[in-house]
Amino acid sequence: MTETATPTAPPASLRNSPGLGPMPDPIPRTEIIYPDSDGKPMADNTRQFRYIVTIQGGIAALFADRPDVFVAGDLLWYPVEGDNKIRAAPDAMVVFGRPPGDRGSYLQWREGGLAPQVVFEVLSPGNTVAEMTRKFLFYEQYGVEEYYVYDPDRGSLDGWIRRDGRLEDVPDMEGWISPRLGIRFGLEGMDLALHRPDGRRFETFVELEQRAEQATQRAESERQRAESERQRAERLAERLRALGVDPDHLEAD
Image 1 (cartoon, rainbow, N blue to C red):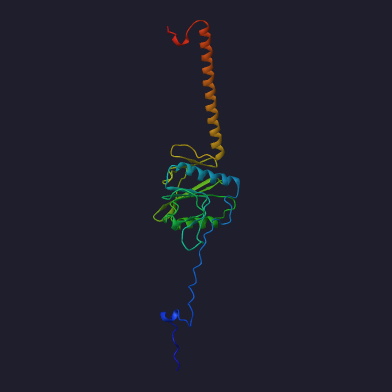
Image 2: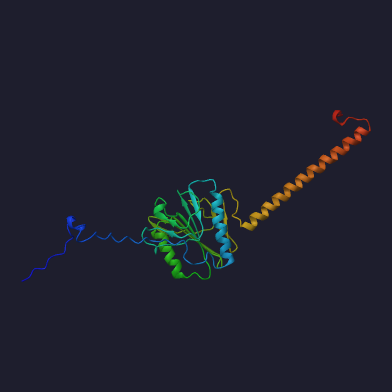
């Protein structure tokens, strides 16, 4: 009976033997690419886009002086190193404990292991129940603390907050204040209304521009009024001088 030898690695003395030639280098591991885009548009319509930009911009402005708050819109988030299929792109997300700045995607293992604590989704007619269920389970599994969903077409606002490792429903979103952000939620008719801690409402870019223009116009009106008053005072002083009265030394009765 012939015994079958068990294959073993060659001894070190034979690895570089002149007769065998040098041993080939190990096959390099394939680098995993984490794409910056999933090929989907940021928004499906102008209304959804407007809300996403208003939410992201309003939160970024609120924490503009904080060096440890990162705010992004429609940025791919990869929570697991080595797997580029596990990912999500929230319409807006906030990470406390990470610096602001540009990123192509959010690679959690390069961000101190911190998951976004707050996530927003603004629905469009193209969103399905199955898709939103997958997103909910993703956010619940990977550590989101607060999750908010606004549907402009239905005028509905829903929220969930993490308790005991799970995302639990916020019973009433009207007047709800985010524990992390400090902003107040509500609806004005069917429109989403977010208010800063000082009571100011989140505004669209157009609204901000209009308010800035109004402030500029008020300042210009005040400047013109002051200039008119100065000129009137100068004319009065000239008349007094013509009458031989020194306007700088008038005595009050």
